[in-house]
Image 1: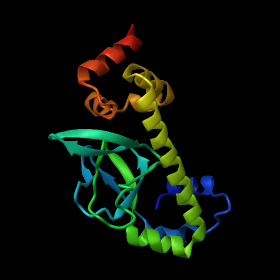
Image 2: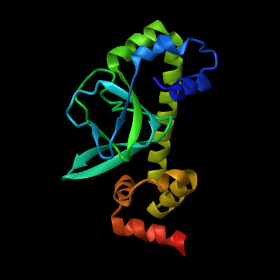
Image 3: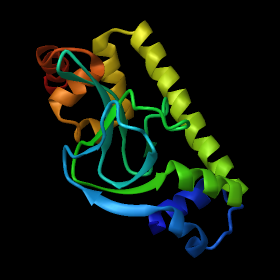
Length: 190
């Protein structure tokens, strides 16, 4: 467990005063290389990931192309939330968008942690509420604005992130061709 994750927990749950050493054994920190797969579709999803440094992305394969649907930056959690709770085969894959340092926790450790430290359930509830809210907002935005306006919104909301995302990955996330993405980008260059 990293100091960064511990501070993140305390930021969201100020009443959490458990010594870091008591919860550290539930977590494992490691570095991963750009494009390294953490989870592949159809593998059993039994891990949740916290990004200390870098960026991960969630995607599925369709017609041999990646369809990107979510990113996780520093201080964000990511997993295949469809299958993590019950250990079913993943419907999504997770890969590193750049060299990253992550802290992971197995489903077994996650469940044990929540039983031993009930305030951690409140922490993860806050994490999941935010993630769900963001997913719903993205769905609404996709349904109600043009791709050009979505690009503008994303660029204004996440200026640091958009500079880190390679164009093919962001084009996939938006559901547009690279050529269309270049057109939206050119509007900001002029």
